[in-house]
Each structure stands twice: as structure tokens, then as C-alpha cells.
Amino acid sequence: MSFAIFSIYLLSLASAFLLGNTAAAGAAVLEGAADALRFAMELAGALCLWSAVTELLESGGAADALARFLRVPLRALFPRGFCDQDTRAALTENLSANLLGLGNAATPAGIRAAKGLSRLAAEKELHLLVVVNTASIQLLPTTAASVRASLGSAAPFDITGAVWVSSALSLLAGIAAIRLLDGGKA
Amino acid sequence: MRTIGELLVPLLVLAAALCAAARGADVYEVMAAGAKKGLLTLWGMLPSLLVIFPAIRLMRASGLPELLSGLLRPVFTLLGVPEETGLLMLLRPLSGSAALAAAAELMRIHGPDSLIGRTAAVMLGSSETSFYVVAVYFAAAKVRNSRRVLPAALFADLVCFLSSAWICRLLWG
Image (tube, rainbow over all chains, first blue to last red; front, top):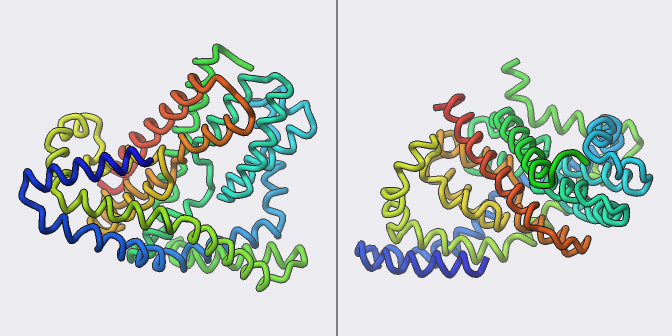
């Protein structure tokens, strides 16, 4: 990340010189800092509301309900992990937390699942688990919608359908790619 | 159907509250605890936002995007992706808060309901911070072979960006 920020600064300074935008560029850095705080404040309301709703869903047993739906895809994708009780529980918890958008809960469960899979020496399933976690399977795009809401969108959630299609295609592409690179099934 | 769409947010809150109440949870306390978690998440992101926002603002003001988009326009036009989303696509796999800042900037400039604003939102909502996820899992599970996982994850990101752009153009173009 440091490299990316360095590059942005150097390239920007160079093009500000070349294009004669030095005055605007000089003012922009401090404006950006003030803007970061303003943006965070405007985002806070919507983000916290969705966080509260997710907490409600969690205490309402949404994770257990999702776990039932996840049995079939889990058995298909992680046949060896599915046979081991602890690994199966960790996989289920990881995927249902991801579906609910609980990043903080998904990662510890995912790491337990990853350790389980490497104990079972199921290397291909371990690779698949990481690839699935690099794709977004969140059911409601709450962060993107919160940003839209904070900027005055008429219907912040009207992107949900597009997000589902795009997430699904990306997930399928990731699964296909790792299957191909790892050579066939399981 | 339209009324349901307009009342989506309060209806979702109510449905979630009923779910929790049916399990005997104290709805108010649970929501307050959830809101606190949201604040903590934002608090955790704020330092990186404070570093990244000035950099992105500097870049916009310097005229670099115009310079680059002239060069990149043929490629992006060919792929059917708005060239303005270039920086967002570059930052998305590297850092969640940087991508959030880049997407928010696009939505602010072009409007959250514009084609570019929606494309940025869909790209942001349908992808993850791939490099970070791979690093965390490989450190935790002591996997050595990331040579296959990272390309697969980045390929999935590419498919995500292309399909986001295409779907948005189809629906709102």
C-alpha cells in the first residue's frame, strides 16, 4: 500500500507540474484530509444502522437458517472438509458470516477452517476456501448502499440485483480458475 | 411493488427486529450493540481514510486522470468499462478503505445515481480485498503455495469488474 501511495504522489506532482495545475494540487491535499473526516461522519449513520440490523439478524438465528441452506454447496465444494465435524462447523460459520456481511466474524472462522483443511491435507480445498473468501458473497451490499445514501441517492439499494449477478459471476470464475490451476476436482 | 421498494429499509429493520424478538432478544439492546460495532469498524478505517483521501484528491487536482484516460481510453472502450473507474479497479484488491475512498469520490463527482456512480458502487459491493484475504489465510494456515491462489483470486476480480460495468450499462446506460 505504501508503494501505491508513493506512486500516486509522485505521478500527481509530476503531472501537476507538466499541466500547470500546481495551485489546485497544492490545496487539494489539505482539502482531502478534511474531506476524509466529513465522509466518515456522513457514512457513520447508515453504516451503524446496517450494523445494528445485522446484529438483530444474528441474534434472530439467521446464521443457523443459512447453515441449513449451505449444506449442499458445502458438501459439493469441500467433500473432505465436510466429513470432518470441526472443519465443517468452521466452514459453515465462515460462509454464513460472509453472507451476512460480518467480516469480523468470518475471518476467525475461516482461519479455523483453513487449519482444519491443512490438517486433513486437503490442499485443493484449502486453496478453494481462500478463493471463495476473496470473492464477495454478501447478501446485501450495505457498505456500497451506505455510501450512496450518504451522497443523496434516490434508492441506495437498487444496485442489489446487479451486485448479486456480478458477485456470482466472479465467484464462479474464481472457482473455475482455481480448479483449473489445481488440476481437476478435490 | 414500488411501495415495497420505497419502504425497503424500514421493512428490513422491522423484519430483523421481529426475528430477534421471536428468539427473546432485547431488540433495543441488540441494535445498540450492533451500532457500536459499526462505529468501531468506522473508527478502525478512519486512519487509512485520512491517509488515502488527500492522495486521491491530489491526483484529481493534478490532472493526471485526464492524462491517463487519454492513453487508456481505447482499451477501456474496447472492454466496455468506464475509464474513470481505473483507479478503483487498481486499488480494490489492495486495500478496502482505499477502494472505498476511490468509489466514494467517483459517486460524489458523477452523482450516486449516474452510470459511473452506480458502476463504482457495484464494483465495490461485489468484490473483496483479495491480496489482504490471501495474506491473512496464508499466514494463519501456513500455506506455502500462493502461486495458484492469487492468480485465481485476481482473475475473479477482473471478471467482477467487467461484469459490473456490463450489467450497469445494460440496466442504466
